[in-house]
Structure formats: structure tokens, C-alpha cells
Length: 216
Image (cartoon, rainbow, N blue to C red):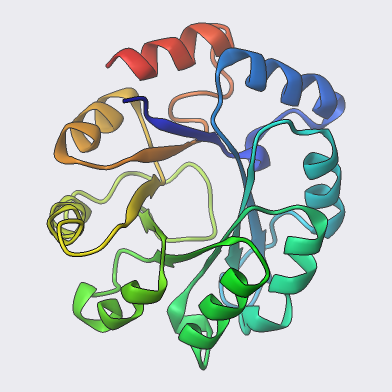
């Protein structure tokens, strides 16, 4: 079984984005990960709809969108229309997260939630029944280049145990170094969002890096 490896396109070289997409696909990337931020739910701005549309048009692999925004119900239809195949929302940012997850599924995409380091599993356990993928943040959302928060490992371990009760894909986002990927993969995680900790800005080729990450 192979790991799901999803390059974070916020870290890509936008001077040659089409070439970046082609190189990452040939290297064995599983999906592309797009971070959308509103400057309100998180104190920063990320990628936008035009970025999403362009990447979806070029990509031959699925695109997942991480909505770090308030009231995501107002935007899920637009992102799915652009071509997003997986949509992650933050339950804290939505008045009725179950309604939003059901809408995502109705529109033909995979409904997902993203949980912050400070989000307890108890607070989202009932929501998991409407979720097919969960994005576990190992850093506080909104900024790249943060350090992995070790207590999150306990949360991943508990989520892996819940997979016995419900079909649930567990993705990890934030400071995904090769060492951390190896550790959490062995613990039972299914995939990882790849940023500067493992993939971008390295001397090695994308192919060499992704092959190595699949092997660890």
C-alpha cells in the first residue's frame, strides 16, 4: 500500500507553475493540496479561486482544497465547480458543519474536516460520521515553516483506533519531514501534505524525494 502524498501548491514555483505540476505528477504525487485562507479565520491569506481553477485545469491527478475560512458553506459549490475533488472545512469555522459536509458529498466531492492542534477529538467525534477524510494539523493553521507539535501524535493514534469503527482516511498536514512521515505512517496515517519540510526547496529531484518518502 502506497502513501497518499499531496504537495502543497502554496510552496510551488509560480514562475513555472505548469512545469511544476507536470514534474510533480511524473514524480509520483498522489494529489495536489491547495490552501485557501481568508485573513479572518487564520491571520493570513493563501491561494485563491484563480489558482485553484488553473491547477485543476492542468492537473491529471485529484486536487484537494483546504478551506481555512469562515462560513465555508458559502464557497464549497464554487470550488467543486472549479474541479476540486476533496474539500476540507474547519468545524469551528462553520455554524452547521454537518450541513456543509452533506452538501460537499451531494455535489460529488469527498467531504473532509481539518482539525487544529487545539481541537479535541471529543468535540468532533459525531461529525466524523459525515466525514470521509480528516486532515490533522500538526501545526497551527495559517503559516508555513512551523515546527511539529508532538502532542498531536496522541490524536493521530486515537483517530487510527477510530478507523475500526468507521471508514476514515487520515491525512497529516504541517511540518511533514521524512522522519515524521515514517513515524506517523507506521502509526496508521494514510497520507501527508508535503511542503518545505520534505519536498520543496531541496537539492534532490521531486522524483528522488517522493520515491524516498514512499520507501520510508
